[in-house]
Length: 170
Picture 1: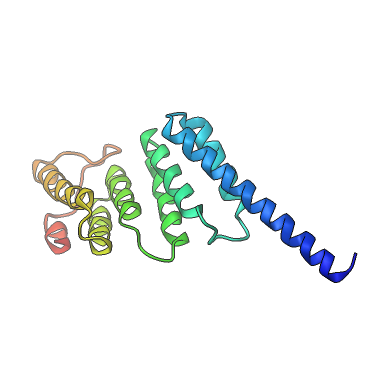
Picture 2 (picture 1 turned 120 degrees about the vertical axis):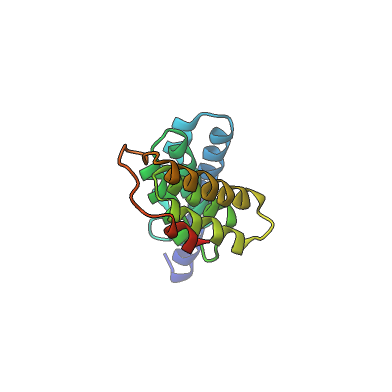
């Protein structure tokens, strides 16, 4: 092969690989939307693995975010926190939806002050993101009320952090 033919072959293979990646992501998204979360999760994982050398590839952050949503729905919130955090690191810009998801899963694992920060970051990223405003309001209202009432945190341990922790976060 000549140098130009090798280059054309490599470009052709790269184009085919990217088309397969896009198809994999589209299939995962379709399964996710259809409610087949087990199959979708597997394809999202395959898609992310296929992009390991190009972490800024289109769709990686969305796949990780969607995996976090699936894991949250399964009650696997510690894993969901890891996935959405990785999704946010893979993005060049903050995304209000991703930050909202981060707030939701942080609250679910009992990290209300961090959830407040995530919801605030979502609002900073998109002041019109009503779901972020609602998440912030619910976290401040219910978690402060729970603390004042002496309700235990997820996992059964009593919350010891004082109310001032929330006041400082607001």
